Amino acid sequence: MKRFLPLILLVGACLLPLFFPSCANTTQAPSGGKKDTIPPLIIDIKPLPGAVDVPLEGASFVFTFNEYVTIKTPSNIFLSPPQQRPPKSRLRGRNLIVSFEEPLEPDITYTLSFTDAIADANEGNLFPGYTYVFSTGSRIDSMMITGTVRDCNTLAPVKGATVLLHRDLADSAVLRHRPYAAAKTDDWGFFILPFIQDTVYRLYAIRDANNDNIYDPETETVAFADSLIRPVLVASDTVPEILRYDMLDTLRCLARRSEHELKLFREKPSKQFIVNKVRTSERSAYLTFMAPGAWIDSLWIRGYAADQVISQFNILQDSLELWINSRRSVPDTMRIHVNYRKTDSLGRLVPTQEIVKLPLPAEKRTFSKSVRRNIKHEDTTCVYSFTAAPETVEQNGFVLEFRNPIISERFDSVQFLAVNTRQRQSRAEFSVERDSLNLRRYILRPKDKLQPGFEYSMKLPHRAFRDINGYYSDSTLLKVSLPTDETLSTLELELTGVDRKIIVDLLGEKRDKVLRSYVTDRDGTLLFPYLKAGRYSIRITQDGNRNSIVDTGSLLEHRQPEAVVFLDFSGSDYLAIPASAEIVQSADIRTLFP
Image (cartoon, rainbow, N blue to C red; front, side):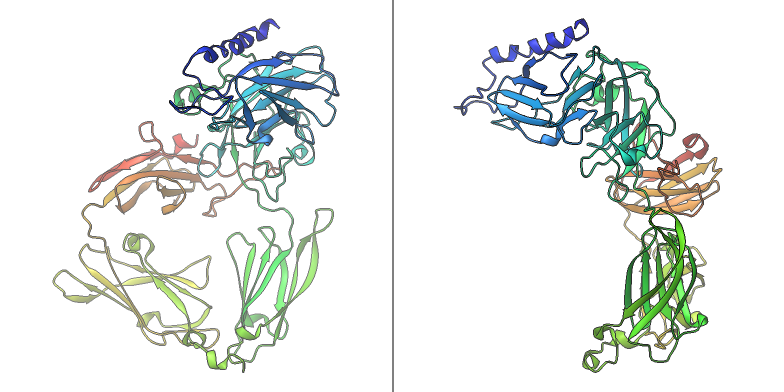
């Protein structure tokens, strides 16, 4: 009990505010004066903290507060190790009584935590939290583990994640049963697993959607420590990591020792099967697979030769688009024969044949009697989108994307014109690149550097393109000029030590949207022009498999998500860019990814 004497004294000290006239009277409505902003306090606990030989059945704990309280979030009254059913809590006067609906385990040290669970009954001031420890054995375990949980993409701390500690060292343990110990992260993503045994563990974190303390890969995100861990810190009620702090007290919260950093990610589904199938038009359809990397041995559409079928997977290879390149009338029902590897009941990928039948709804048949009077111009035209943004046209060019694959093109008939500041017009050169990931998408890129003050126009003439339906395209004129706002700024990012492929993203202050992006594997300078004054972040992702996208991790394959770092700007995660500025920033990739 001596070890818990400081805590008992601290609880006793909580009685002092009751004797100050500034404290609110919680037994009746206030008659005036300042609003009560003081959270409730625990003034007594029965049995005292550190109780041992607690009975396995019928145990209950009474926490007495200095005012009437309410249970705001029952699920935040959290027992570790967790049981199948959460603790049962009820109020009686100023007492919170916690009991259990199933027997406790023998010779186990338990912790009972309150985080954002209790508030005072009048003003709703939240109780800051408390961790109560007891044991069903003759002693209290003495070790602890700390850490931080972050989002793998933004590196932002994750509040309310469930951290799981397993003595079962199999990677699948987190999928099958409840942990030896568990805790919730606070506003800073910080967690502590106190009063645990001195042994070896596996450490995980999950977003526990159904509060069962077991990882469900279909609905939840997960994080894991790369190696086995063994606690080295000794727990006591006076160490800074166990004490409760105001979450607005940045200095104290950040001063806590965080031993492990876990990064939450969403796994790709592991079960493979056709999950969706849609007839998008008379001559097109798509199939969606449950998991990426679909393995197709063969595919054909009944009634059509192999060279009459155009197919395209997306980059994750979990969505397949199909088009019929034939002028003859299509059947009412498209029958797609798919031989692929499907997950069986034992979790194995086995060869499977499916015949996908896709009837054509009447409203999608262009020349059916019921819709003939409602035919629109786009129904008999080669439809496309043609876009260019002034801020990014130098990097991204003019983007031309067709609704359906084209079977003939005349890019040599496209006119690219430049009008200078004296209104003199001249022809300009451009190149044509077909997107390697989208056969319907083309990039028309100016060969010469675009000039400020010039107006550029790209003209696509009539009947320049013909799609698989036999329809020709209309003409379009797209004009664009570089921004002339003198308040816009430019950021130059000088990369050195680039010894791997990386993805460089410029994000806004909220980090919820990529504004500009580069993929590179060599030293050089990346240009981010035409930026409004504000705060920006630069995220750099290590593209380990060189596929130019940010890949997630895998628990059972013991693969972490691709490493992400945010550039540090003199101690800040954000770069403040003023108006009308030219900013030069450097980054050594070798030091960012040691």
